[in-house]
Length: 339
Image 1 (tube, rainbow, N blue to C red):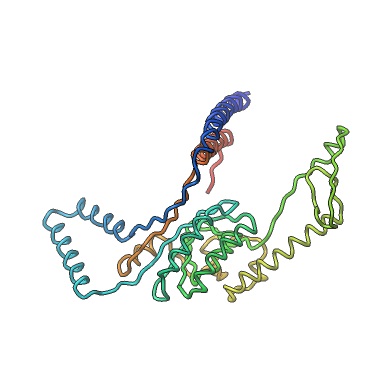
Image 2: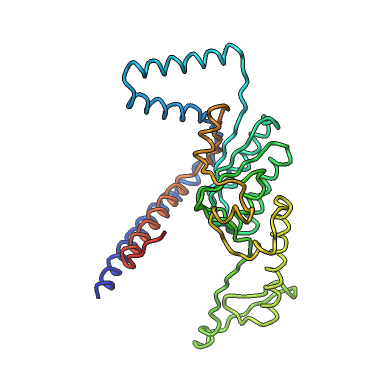
């Protein structure tokens, strides 16, 4: 009974949120026709300033006044010497890809890659901080193609995985000249999966007919509402197998050192085990790698910010709110903990 009461309260909150969102979206839709979508903007930030600010804050907090001034004086002297000798530091271009099931971040990635390839050379480096559990085949195929442009241009590409790069995420990661992984990041899942619910028997039980009309023998293999056949299942499985073979060939092209029969099973490995499978080249977090790079190179973070309409911004805010409500309710109901 306690769970039922809690569920009722949760359901009431969800309904309230949904109704409020619908009202706001209705208002936003009325305004949509009044303006056109604005183009996005490329934002470039120098990460060296960020790391230097962190260091200075620590020094200011820990060192006494005398030693702090001495440290600042030494840093200033080094900077002046570098400017005087006109020493050209290596450049590192840092990109981020936080992938959802539709690889929506590719809309920004494609512009970021185009921008940096207009100036980057083989003496520079691109670092991609990648986080993705995979998603749609065609979406991650496009995202991978954007990274392939970097390799084709002869610009070194390093991929850093702090949490997860699986399935389509690993499809992107394997393009890197080097893959760095945090010890407990999740990698692999070189496999293909598809799930299709079918409610045909339920409809049949209630005397509801559903017609599926096609022109072409394999235009529709499996369906949600119609009756599925063994022939349709066989064709669907065949298509999955073809996609899997293409996936394996793609990974093998960029990481020929992999033993494909061992790693293309759909399994995942944590970073510490993945390095033994040669799925990654080194165990290191992106923070550690970039902090080291900042000592001798100029780091530039690129982000192409897409302009979002009012309706899109409201929809995103509503989606995040609903996600938090669902997660909070589920964690309290099950009292589960995830490691």
